[in-house]
Image (cartoon, rainbow over all chains, first blue to last red; front, side, top):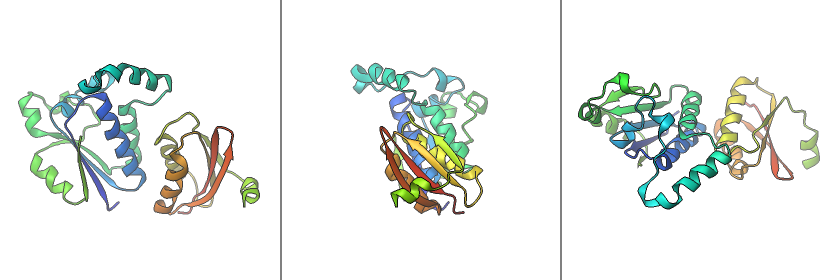
Length: 140
Length: 83
């Protein structure tokens, strides 16, 4: 795995967590490393128990959100969390999910508060340095 | 070509019909890892992305893409494990 996809996950709504999981899957399939940095609402969405109960949708698509969720359930689309878990499993150590140290401190969180899919807590400097090794970094 | 492909012996079939992108591709990757070199796997997919994604993935991953057989409402994508 030489190429790498980095993503800064700032958003914590389901409609934005979906593309994170799907893009991670695509990168794994194409044998790229995946480097995810969870910050702010993106990190809040990875609190223990949160991925299973989070139903939030973007405010700007509020009117269509519930219909979209229903459509996905009806079609048995796996959740964003399950999709990301599968990507991580198939990525075999090449998908790293990092929590933002600053957000952790600000929200008074410890590693015990995080979902097990999160690998570690890093500072923004380390993430940016890692992201520099690839051509693509997305802010979601 | 189509006739030859129809006659290809398949070692394993993955029924990913009803699964959306990237589901069928991810299921194929898992199956390829579990298979031995030279084994043939077919993926049944109703997802329109598979027809483009799976050949691309094969090229990238060094797997042999044998072809597509169109059926009603889905396609059979046939892959041989190359490495």
